[in-house]
Length: 426
Image (cartoon, rainbow, N blue to C red; front, side):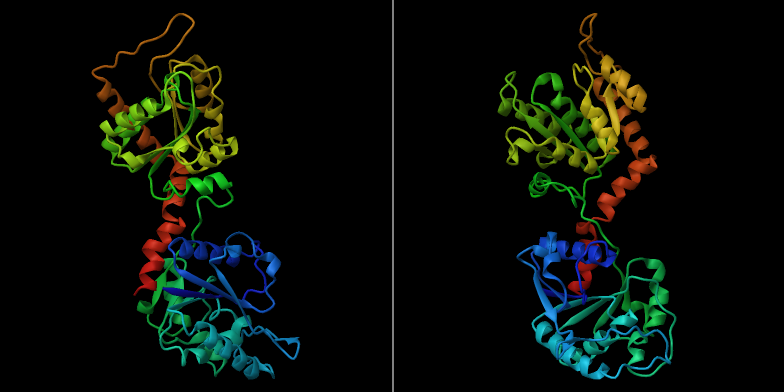
């Protein structure tokens, strides 16, 4: 499939909110290996091509915006009494010719505010003329502001208030569809919702970008990140076990990311097998457990990467046998994670009490001697009771809930799969 995005941007500065919306849309399409081109004004500055706009897979096409060295006048039309600029129809014809040239091989043309904004009336009229020569192209027209009140007016001003053939009108929320249909004098059935989206790893470092090739950050209900040296006292195995219980007893989709680095205490391959086996035995799938050492980072990831991952995760569990402070506890807390700590470790008890953490019992090293926990009525019942409470607490915590929903429901992947893709292939 070939998709063209029609914006007529004069710049790609991300302080302009629509640039951010288009950036995420391009990210989604490229991620799905769709051939994407972006149509912009010929005056769009090349030096602003950063991030996804500099991706070699993206074709940026510049559309004519001047005549004899003088830029077109993008006059803003808002009222039916407005007078059409003297060069309007000449400019429309020139733009129309470029649209036909650049869109003729496309399957879908996605327009952003082209039919809505009065400043784009020349582009609105041009794309409607071009459409007569583009029978093979399906159009999706996004409106990003509250729809305007319908006005009965003559051509070309009526381009802002009339339906367009082979086009679906799109608004970012359901509540605006009635007004959208009224503005363009079309049926509501010819309108659809596509929410704005966010790339969960936007602004994170290159290591997170590499990890995103191995880890699905957008779909799990629960993401647990645990950094540490791969030894028995850090109890990686207890985390995989507990996450297995969470998946089994709450039906949540769980992903566990271990930011591990080698230890001389135990062979890494041996211990990772134990960790995986225990998690799988209690309900996880093999691909629910990820070691960053298996993703190209055998000696650990940067601390910056850990902090980035804590921004994506929503549950932090520390069952460690011994801690002098537990720096990762406050790192996870600072990034909005629900905190679960080993109550038997004095340092974790102290910090966790300050943070309002949830406490559970695992054995621990203490000055008076190591503690051994006997679970009643059984270990499985103890964990079942507690994981159900933890998930209930997380579901009832408005901050944790909002963070999780944003990562899942408003991710590029979700919006593409459930809202944009059905329109592309309709």
